[in-house]
Length: 419
Image 1: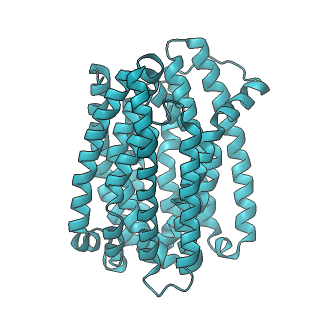
Image 2 (image 1 turned 60 degrees about the vertical axis):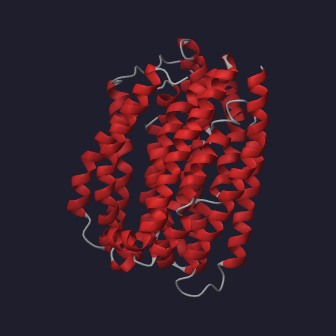
């Protein structure tokens, strides 16, 4: 059931998200116009590679640790144990990620040319450790997390407009976009504003290993998911060049921002569904059904807006240099609806009821299929076609995910209702 606490959480999240979108509406067209295809492409090419280090650092904790915190809420000792062992594990993985990425950039010629941009992008790995979003989510304090994020972003917004003047300033743009979460995290760690930090509990080696084992299936899922998200941008850059990355990323970034509206519903309901799946299975299914109607309806409306409006919307938002992103957006617009349903059938249905392995297997199949299709279609693609072919592949993969998750979710719902 959507009770008063959850409803207020959702309303507050959307209010905060409204402020975030006002800032995004300013920064997205500003960056596309100022950095142009080459600079915007370089920034997103580096981000797609750094995502692998971010993936290793997160290691699925955003799902496993969130679920643990949600279940343990009210037991201060258990929450403290989960918090500190997860924080230590993420810190260790972040150090490993930075070392591996630094070595990779030094070895790969295409990446070495953009070494400063890659180095600045690694600040996102630091931000992932400093700002424990998984803890706020598990405690159902996403309103607080969002407010902290907005405050940090607002602080950096003026510097972005002031310091980024041309495509040569792409490194500055990267730094200023990574800093908000670092600032927000540092503020919370020093003040504990709004949500007290759990009391110190020294993690043991078995604690950390147990945390990694518990997160392993989620890490594999995220790794598989990366094979059809970040890997797409990386392969477009390798085979078609930075400019094609600019076209693809201009559409993909806007798509990602719009999907964030639906993602808020997922973030708000996932901890509660996870809790109900252990205590009241029929109630969990009822909440999932409500989420399906809300997310599906929002996804359909947003998809139609993008599908119809892309030819005039993209040139207006991105500028003449990135106008070729319009056909890419038309191909990708149905992903809004498909992604909304994929959340319902996958993350909100399969994971709370323990179907982690099926969830992971489907993502692995989808990711492998995505990479294989891109390896076949991208080499030799005519100029201007690489980004479009990538969009077509991503749309196909997303369609497969929705069908595969829905097929298993039907059984999960039936079993939960009978419980």
